Image 1: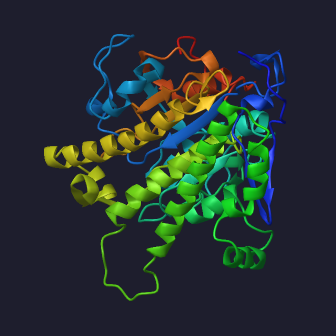
Image 2: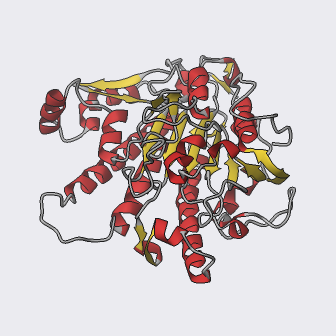
Length: 439
């Protein structure tokens, strides 16, 4: 791909009073007559780590056939449009994640494949996402982005031997530094498009300005006048997306009923939960597109979640359903929940596939790990783990495969392979033994 338009620096921002908005990759950011691959604007691999708690009903997750001719299982069925960029990996286990304190350590050990030391202070290992952040995340405003749909908590999320350090996050920046997951769409929006330098200044700006986009409107209009037709259209679409997300966040905030005295109700309301999950994915998409981050971690539900799923006909609490005791009715409900999680992910992937990024799409230039660090939620075991990659990885991931490895092959091998395909120079992670040449 060669571009002949005027050169605009990749790190250009729209600026206004107390606000700043990063821009997507525009043709104008590529020097005239230069191949995209030879510029600072060349597509770089983005990584996503999407974690769902309480494992999966594995016979409804695992495709029956291996190789390239496989039909998607019921839980993975929403990923059908992306099957050519989908790699399902079977036979994986995570022995370092095994413990009697299951829920207390399962989230954090997913990306570390290292058993934490006992004690009330965190002491484990750097997770795969943060290893990547060290190498490919340092030239973005946010080396990594940690998001969730609900606050951590629930019975079993803490343990007398391990404390509460490992249940509420999947990311450890250092062996002793767990990173908090942001579960408020409002706070995440302000983190990505922050207003002011202090709480007082932000409050004053919110009162003075109706929108972040209003603050940068003059700069945006000036930039539009310098761009070509394609760039103007892309910038307009991008800013409209920001505006729509801002509207949705504000609407969600307006529905806050915390000031009212309400009777006890089931944990979470279905509509707001669905809205929150989609908002979080949409803001992650925006962060990728604007190059605010290249690494995203997402907990789609909290460990030991009491969330109910009335929106899909499951009024029972998530964690309670996960203890199915092989009851067919409970297992069917759990499959519904797991299918729903995949369905919302598929909406995010569709938007990534439809978002231009240099000579391809965001999905072409990404690797999304989708899985859990638990297998059978009733048994609380770590084999076989539901694990899949989605995305082209800038041409470094083959896709269109169901790969089956020998039983108890370390999950760490998949993580090591993912980092390798993203250009992260690391030779070992947790209990890894090798990279997967077949991926």
